[in-house]
Image (cartoon, rainbow, N blue to C red):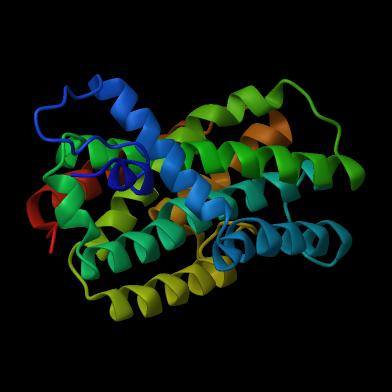
Length: 257
């Protein structure tokens, strides 16, 4: 098989008789490839960067919106970081994986030296890389809007990582069980629904319900981390439960073609 296929698939080696790169290197290459593709996609950039940035400006400037007690720019940034995680880990990942599945890309890569586990690990790594880019961009914008960067960002790391785990697993579950067109519709609808009343950006009036959702738990945990520098143990436990449950469901019902 020609070397051009290796280049077009992000560095994967399909050469008969060729030695495979170490597993970690294959995963890193796949993660870098998928993150690069996402950053070059206009629709993905709209979803992962432009819309969260617009929401951040709006939430910070519209003082009639109740963000809770604390520094307003910090609370606004916390909610929008949670929204950015959902945009990348759930909506963007579900849509991209759904169409890769429809087009046979998943089946091809699953039989390559990368393997199914490596492919999924690469997707998670790509999401983490994109979230880092989002945090840097949104943090810079929040600084321009009056936020003072501090060590509270480190307090938010566990919530962000658990949010990535839970929503990536949920996005893969959707992409692996529903047709691509259905995945596109459901992923976008859920994004709007969670933005409007899922407890991501703003505290929800339906908090007894939304606190048990991964969106409400993520939004609360990141807002509290950036707003007061505290760990929200309850929401973190909720995110762990969702991450484990969705991962097990994905392992059971995900279809590769």
